[in-house]
Length: 333
Image (tube, rainbow, N blue to C red; front, side, top):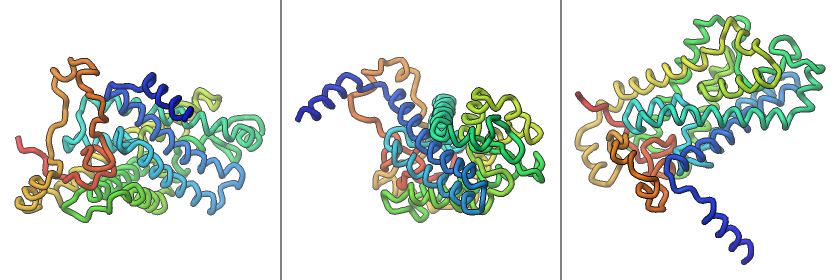
């Protein structure tokens, strides 16, 4: 009884009513969970010297991290955890453009904090493996625990194309998972299916550059390593590779979004779309909040209930796991 009373008082004291702030907190936490599991799995190589088994552990950890992140805050922020996915949702008008830069910053912050947590977790192992010198190249380098770097044989052009294709495939399949007119995933299993998708892409496309697929996943930990002692070489290694995981996944997300529209979503019978609308399915609308809404106080915008913003469906068209969101053709001008 005492514990319940304490939690109730704490909730009344700490509860945030501003919807955007709640979404940002959820996005930070979901990204933190995803990245902590991902980076901690990658850190296994400092103990086992990157055998095939530890590479597979890293891939599996990344996929399970995605699943954990979606389950953590999918119903609050949509658990985007990836600027490329946020961009895709903006392109199909399921996420307001004004929120896009905010979510990008929040996702980078979550990744940065996760890198710090993994550094603390493996502090002794990192310094033992590196013999007291934090390096970016060589047999005792540890920078690749945190950020991605291309293999020695991979050029900038090839690596850029690798990320465009990998992220494009990711977005295409996620669009299919979200589309109820296609073959929707059973409710509650969407994070599991997305995790299996990520694992399949990492296993098949990870050899060139570690398969970042996510600008926040790369730049947040890279900034941490720069500040934590690895130095400016984290930006110069691989012929200045650092910008590729920032730009290429965004281009890949746009390509994947429009390919799904062009090859699938444009061609559904109108009757099917109308039937879904009659059943209460979310249809494609511009979700940007008007200036009048922005000008209202948080209390005025928020009645106290959590605003539909993600998983479980049909709460938000911007969630990675909503099976009730039809990916409909873009509006005609």
